[in-house]
Length: 169
Ligand SMILES: C[S@@+](CC[C@H](N)C(=O)[O-])C[C@H]1O[C@@H](n2cnc3c(N)ncnc32)[C@H](O)[C@@H]1O
Image (cartoon, rainbow, N blue to C red; front, side, top):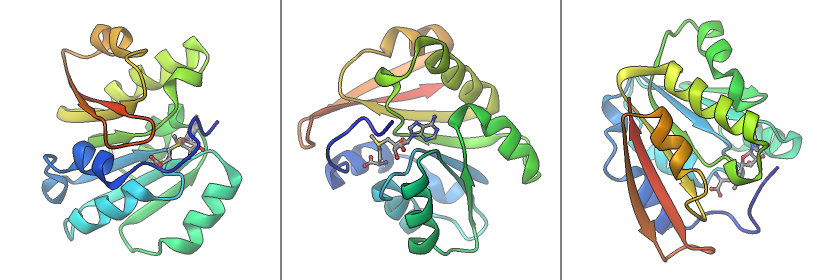
């Protein structure tokens, strides 16, 4: 379920998030926060009116997150990433401007992987961005099939080194 031995590095967090206008987004979704390495970085850049929906499946990470991050703009959901459409509706939002994912897609059964990526696309605003990292290029083809544009970057400064996909509709 976790898909990694260690939390992501600040270099990977920077590669994922530095060029993304989080402060101008209305709704940001984070999938699979784990210990919250990316959440901390997202919070640094969060606009006063930006709402952050965080989806975590693992009980321990969910409970730890609840205690660690208390912020009026964070909406934490305990469940699976393929339910983001439902979570957005429950909170009164139609679409997300940014979806930031550290889900271990390579470990998912192919149906779930495809379902999560398609759901993310359907939940994004037309001008929205989906950002995902992976330790290999395993999901590149699937992302290319589903999104109009997929930009790939690489950072060696992570254990393991990682690819970052930035996808647009
Ligand atoms: C590789 S860890 C990433 C943790 C952290 N964001 C980081 O980069 O260090 C993957 C995270 O995805 C969560 N996860 C796995 N499957 C999930 C699912 N179907 N829905 C939501 N979260 C999931 C895991 O519990 C874990 O927190």
